[in-house]
Length: 163
Image (cartoon, rainbow, N blue to C red; front, side, top):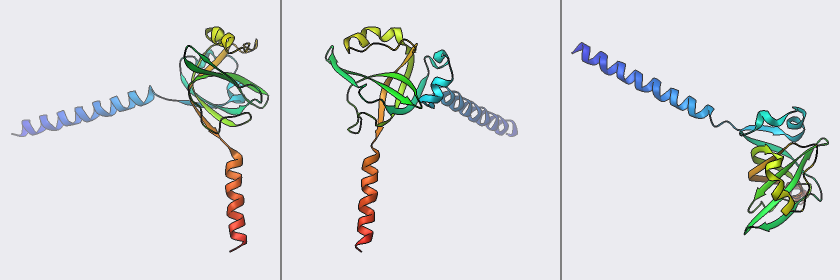
């Protein structure tokens, strides 16, 4: 009977260790890196980020948003910039209501060689920047509208003033 109890304990421990190992392995494989545009571009060769999911944070350069319907899909490109550094972003589909020139944006996607998007760039009537060998293909955009939050604070201050 004692051997049977030891066997059950050993089996339970083995299953627990295997479960923890599987969890750790699956978690490590799905890491998303987060970089500001200037940090990302200061790193030099972006090949190290190729085929990895990354979140790139910056501000939309004024006048850089180009949108066209291509093959029945809304295709879009824009330049994301911070501190004089910039990277081109391509995305498909709808965008947040707060997405506009100079809005603060976090683009989640993959970094790919710019040459893979040359046909799309041509259909959007933009030229790929000669000094940028890589672009971001975003599957998700998050945009923030600072004036919205500033207005909310002003309303709160006004309410306090008249109470």
